[in-house]
Image 1 (cartoon, chains in turn orange, cyan):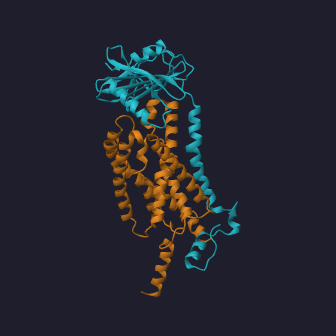
Image 2 (cartoon, each protein chain N blue to C red):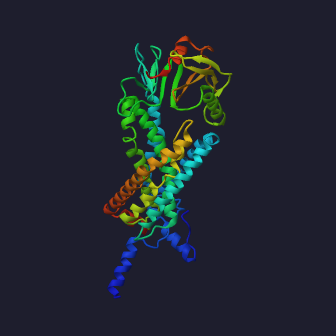
Length: 238
Length: 214
């Protein structure tokens, strides 16, 4: 290998952020505090809701969890498989997943979607809310919620998330939140049956869409960040 | 704050990665992280505080007039009292492509009247027992409990159901259950403790008007 090739390889490795570590404890990083606040709020919200219902709907909650652990594992495996070029550190992947599980969903989507669909119902009628409520609330709160986690992680780990493909992978993991979120769903006496039958059928469609939308979304955000003056690189150099 | 320099290679790397120069700080925080953090904090504020506040503040004014029938799901309907306010639910004949929701709520003279329909293959007594059991297990339903023995009631089309007192920490009322052709129907009437202890005739009429869609 010539010197020129070696130099080019080193430059490529440097540009990709390959091998760089993530240090999460960054008290001077505002994104770090916002990440903690929102994930903490989501964890508390999840605990409160599940704790309120677990004595009645325990079997349904357990069934939902098992189904989505299996389902989420498949997406985890798939997303890991496509992470071929500069493998993301496990801690960063876990951080993205935790954001998707508690920050984007139990904090932002659960509250924002409910309020917005209710408002649609009041302002435009029940029919409009039933037909368009989900479609006109998810893009705001679910997709922005997941995308905002990627934005925070871009500024928490700028030495690692450097390319659009990095954003693509982190975004995909933030969208693989399914094992946790469905616990908030399902109702009534048939809850167990709902978890088993309804979730299996709906997840086949929506799960793939969540991951796909979110990684595309995140790749776009990362590309934008790189194109608009390389803020991620600047943040790295200190 | 961001980790001091140590002689260990790992410590130096950590310090190098997280150190923020003084001239780049604002209130001790890295200026470059303020804008994205503020954007996400704004999304949080809109989703968790602002929008729910606006939603609570918007009141629904959809009065029931003579002839209105509310349909709940595919198979159940009821006739609200004239002057009641439709909070949630769709009048019969006005559903869109999504059909009728399985829950309807009207308010009448300070009380809420809710009808919930779902598939059920037991008897009305069993349905009420299941509701009672669920309420005793729930920790976050305002302390609602069935507080009397059930009595048998009959709706306008002759189907038998059960009715019992249903009181919470800050509300009183009744609960009724019917099973209409494989559909379980739960009817909850709740008002503040200051309302009259007996069920007003108009509310009793609403309960017995719950029936199968012809």
